[in-house]
Amino acid sequence: MFVLGLAALSLAACAPKGPSRPPCPPGKVCIQAGNVAEPVSLDPHKITGVWEDRIVSNLLVGLTEADPEGNAVPGMAERWETTPDGLVWTFYLRDADWSDGVPVTADDFVFALRRIMSPQTASEYASLLYLIKNAQAVSEGKAPKEALGVRAVSPKVLEITLEHPAPYLPQLAKHQTMYPLPRHVVERLGDKWVTPGNYVSNGPYVVTDWKLGDYVKIVKNPRFYEADKVCVDEIYLYPTSDATMAERRVLRGELDMNADIQSNRIAFLREKTPQYVRTHTYLGVTYLAFNSSVPAFKDKRVRVALAMAIDRDFITQKLLRGGQKPAYTFVPPGVANYEPAKPPAWAAWPLEKRQAEARRLLAQAGYGPGRPLKIEIKHRNTPDPMLFMPAIQADWKAIGVDTALAQNEAQIAYAAFRSRDFQVADAAWIADYNDAMSFLYLQQSATGAQNYGDYRNPAYDALLAKADNEPDAKVRAGYLAQAEQMMLDDAPVAPIYFYVNKNLVAPKVTGFVDNIVDQHRARYWCVAGSRTAPAAPAAPKG
Image 1 (cartoon, rainbow, N blue to C red):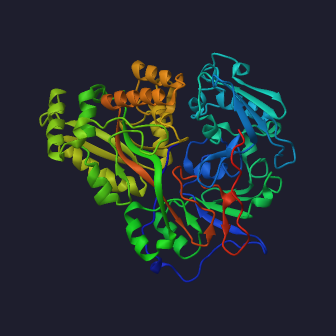
Image 2: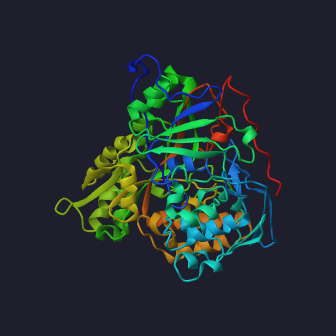
Image 3: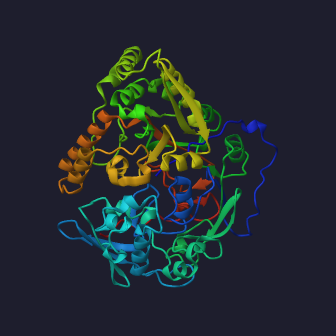
């Protein structure tokens, strides 16, 4: 899942007296949350950003859902089982209703999975579910939707057949791509089903208002299967694109939280308002993608030269200073059941040696003082990229490369990346599930729009396929590491740093638990002193 970088810049001392908040109805618990950006949609099949997921994941619940620590626990499925070969999964659904009172059935899942795979839906995330039997063929229009490996055995029993074993399926099942949809509403209203007043939810909240550029308002769903455990009644989610104002609004009480902090502000805020600052290891990476259609980038020597010339220590330790770690591999540390590939040999060299080698490689490729390489980086105009992009520009100037910087609103930048309207893309990726494949599949030939540089390597694809079909976890991890090593050697991307998640949260908010996937479902939140905080969900039964 791609991510925006955002943060705050200003001191609370600059704020006016007294917070300004929408009125909270008497006897109700309300939260105002900064959510970084405006959602493109509230349709789970048409979103790709974490800021959109923060809204939609409170409206819809999949077969599993995230607990406060971000782990997969039973959601719509009370339990599940799989065949010995790991190819057929059976999910047993709980008794639950949509917010309009219609029961949630296995057919709602079948309908949703067929819809996301439909060529007419053109979901950018469809490839994430190619592990389902015949999913790729259906998505590419080569097989009918009925060929997809999903079926409703009964109204409360769903069967999913896979192309290969996927022990991480329960984790993936909490992702928005596997949410059910209210078939009875979507078939009647089409794309208009996502508008307030039409949106029917099976999750803890329903959307009641969406004022473009201002806020999305969600309120407690009384028909949610555990509504009695949900504390917060109303939540406003704001597109806090003004970093300075976002921090001010939290610190003066207008917002109860904001979903990011500018990295180089963390140390200051820890000193002045430590009770607000929440940081944690995060399964995410910031990287540059080289567009393979650009003639210069068809030469591996050019890609390697540019990758090795970046001073990652300066970016992470001197500019960002938020706990990020230099990245020389693509899969972050901390991913389950995986030992990352070895960094390239040049990662241990001093910068001067790397620069000298980069100049030599560029010279071999035909570039030098008489014929400098000229390229453009298209990047997000959010605070962290705005800090480190000039540093990369300077790093590349030191090896004789003329680099132009083209900043864009993040949504516009990512749209350009997906349409290949760039030379070098400033991108970031957050794990959709805790497995190395969540990162490595991005450079797979079949991935499509999110393989920004259009990297295509049959040997790489073959290793990922071997990993998919390997039941032994250790052997599988070895295949994945080989694939990552191969991709790093080819250098279709240049990893820059590994993320930390950064949230600014008022101390009065309870139930907000820092975790490695930065998933914070509002059903677990409360406000100190308002009500008894909701209990954590039960452990899986299957």
